[in-house]
Image 1 (tube, rainbow, N blue to C red):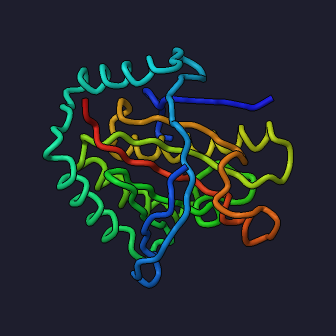
Image 2: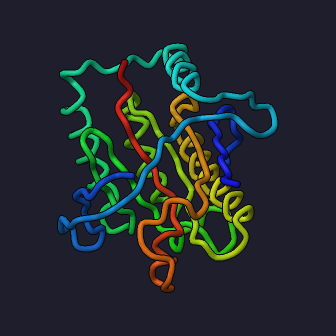
Length: 222
């Protein structure tokens, strides 16, 4: 049976895209990257959190954004807004190991698991905290961006374990962003386990690429 776990980050403690262009974080060169994204629909699980399902989750998040005093972007402003945000993210993340790709007006930050977490751990590596600081600085500035944090694993081990680990890792990243000024109403979290690989799991290097957390950024519009 297919697992589906969705979470929205709210009041936490400190805690498929088609081929598109991405920047190599080490060289700065533009290259083609393939990533996969499904619909990221928010639900709430965990202590003290309510439940959101289906299309209502989008409506509830929009209402939460309004309640937080965050206004939607007009159509004519979106492209320029995302251009500026992309440029600042690329500047902040140069040399960190985090890839930045764009598809239309959506941005995706790809955080490889080997630099973000220790093996089988959902605690963010201390060496990666400065990178998350850099991401949070930009996201706090561009507060009319919806932030979808998604955890992914390879296909080794029990599926239930992989789903749980992927969600815990996504929650850790989202919680770190919230603690650095990204308001909770903007954040949605989900664990996809092994369901959305970006390459084959048949090799060690492929499995390493599939173990990752992605942050999908989309302009808040109505």
